[in-house]
Image (cartoon, rainbow, N blue to C red; front, side):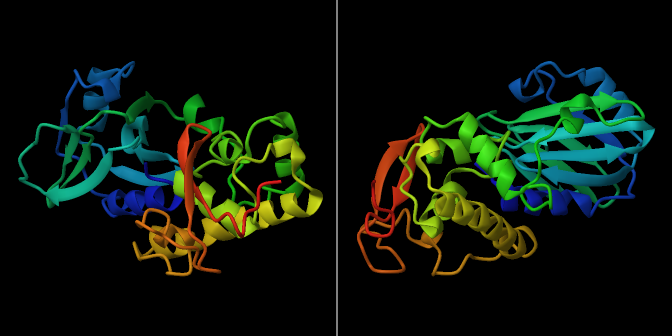
Length: 266
């Protein structure tokens, strides 16, 4: 599932179309990704409108159009935002296609775990205004993290990092990376973390998000070999710090990778 940096990369692809008029709109009205959405209003509002700008927050995307149109996108596990030629054929899993003079903006989702939301109005919709504090903002403080962990003291820290109302944009690989760099075992209850461990967790959360945004979000580049990410799915994968064999287990409902030497179970 796309996480913070990948979502930013997708946003930038569509954002290049800002200022250009939408000539036609194709919507697969029967698609599950459009459940609860007024498809007729979406088509009517976006046809002949222009994209004014876009934002990303965590795993969510929002594109703002003239005529008061607000399009929300959640990519889910298999969703993709593509820029195709203007005359590209509409494929089976293309649930939204916005045709422009020189290109087509396509939302494609084979398994339909994603979601498209639509709102028309002068102000941003509630589903975009009521958002958690962004990790890279000054408001994402150590005190905020400490308070959030205390509210979920019994849950394993891996599960806590996946909660979007506390750590927006962090998904499975980012959570593993953060915990490995923080030297915290993923199964530790959040309420059992010492003060110095919470400080490391806060610092490494911001570091991983900042660097992944710089490398992946802006350039779609490859993360360094010194990151756990590059070894977590390797057969016989080893810790890039001390060469210990990595372990995997389901924690918090997700397959989790860690180094038993760097992240000792307490």
